[in-house]
Length: 293
Ligand code: GUN
Image 1 (cartoon, rainbow, N blue to C red):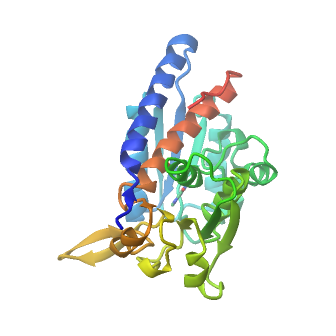
Image 2 (cartoon, protein in one colour):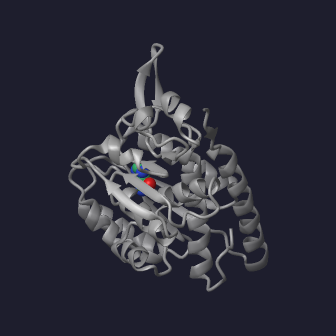
């Protein structure tokens, strides 16, 4: 059997086109141009690639991108002062603090300082709590992308056995909450899980967010399952490096019913949701209805 390849790149293009239309109408009718600020501290090469891709996508959608490059040795106090200025700036509707942060910075303290109304990543304690309680708020982009990709295969996830491998605050935990809200039966696996292969084999929906190259093998997958691969791992290959997911794609695509590729799956959809969350934050700040996209 050969799995359907879920084309995240094409889905993201469609989503970005709808967002660009909504942005154009917002600026024509209300003179409102959504603005995203990205804070990047230090020079992590992967972060530089993500930030450049996000800024280009923001400008392509007709929004304003304000990027701030901060020195790797920035202090916690200086970073908090910067966030407080951005919280007060009316042209900034969304603030994204790129992770990982330098070792001297306490990421939890930084996210706690971001205005929840501008929290495009949904990482503030208030938005995390709202998600857990089923209240409206800004929701993390990668989990939103994962659910949209799964729903491109299954119009309803109700009653399905969903396994999330990984329990991070930025993917695993919020993804589990979103899947619960979709009425899936949710399991979260992690590094202490006993017999991970057998746990995976029970899943109708398998979400891999571990950060280890090709850890999930083909024979761990339930035949016909839908596999959503969040991993982006750089490995040596053909003299250069190449990107692979957390799932061994070639093996898995022989067994799965549908699978996302890496690159071209979750990554482009995550960027599309950064745009959508920026647009939502701008609409809410102006008391306008949220776009139905
Ligand atoms: N670094 C890796 N993934 C993410 C993400 O989703 N948001 C932010 N801010 N940083 C990241």
